[in-house]
Length: 168
Image 1 (cartoon, rainbow, N blue to C red):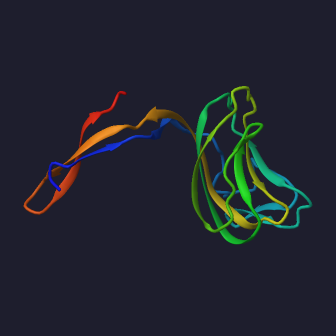
Image 2: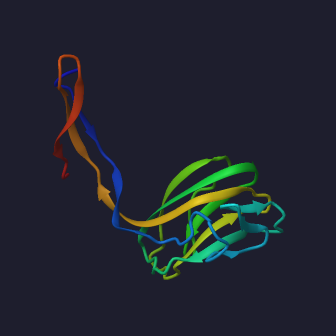
Image 3: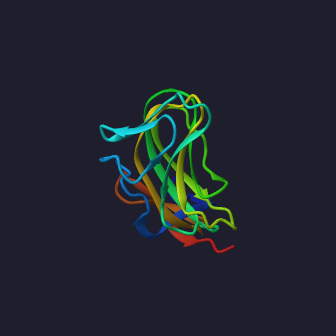
């Protein structure tokens, strides 16, 4: 309805400099990644076979001191059949478990004392799937609180227009 206002509160994550921290995230070659038990790279994907005796990871040094920073991690899971996988950065900076095919985006904040610049894709002992299109970019947390108003933009079209960014 024209003249209606809405208020949104929250957080958004904005790229710090847009620099991609992962090399060979498309798995075009079998390079750069250290592969734990059950992991292989071929045909443009990284695959985990589900034969690991414990949790197993593919890792890459992303050359950064994580230390309390935020990272946007993107990846794709395909050919999923069992288990759980999760991304993490540094020591105990674990992302959320995934257990289905799909495109995933997670924001991971590194621990305040973490200087470990290693990125992990970890599978549990039964994880069986392929991983592709891995991306890690540093982001910063910003206030995303706004007030919008519904405005009529044509004879039968309407649009939410930002009228003020809340600073409270």
